Length: 147
View 1: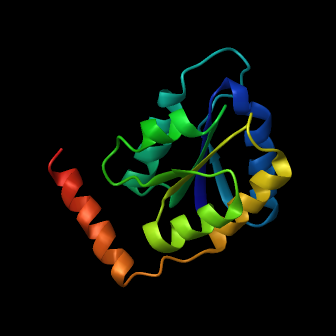
View 2: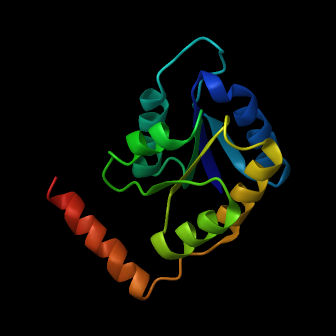
């Protein structure tokens, strides 16, 4: 699986650690975040990762900023993106199973690297369950068409 990772200046170290962890598990990682500690704006990186998913260049995305909140809000402005911000594995797992999320976000100022690994593993290992959940995803797509 090919995964894009985007981040702002707050999350450079965590992005690098998560990327290395995923590479060691056999995932192909595309770094589209900043590698600088110089202040930058998270919507830039959210849009880049989201557009890579929409274009089919990557299958999923991971976004990291201070809290994960702002970067996930920005990503969710792109039609077809279902980004979730998680600080624990259970919500990450259920977001994949029930909401077919295609972007996972978290905060470098909120969680440590070991928790980040657990969250990422839970999210990537979970499978979308379809059925009643597909009906709800289709309803979300209809809302997007009105935008």
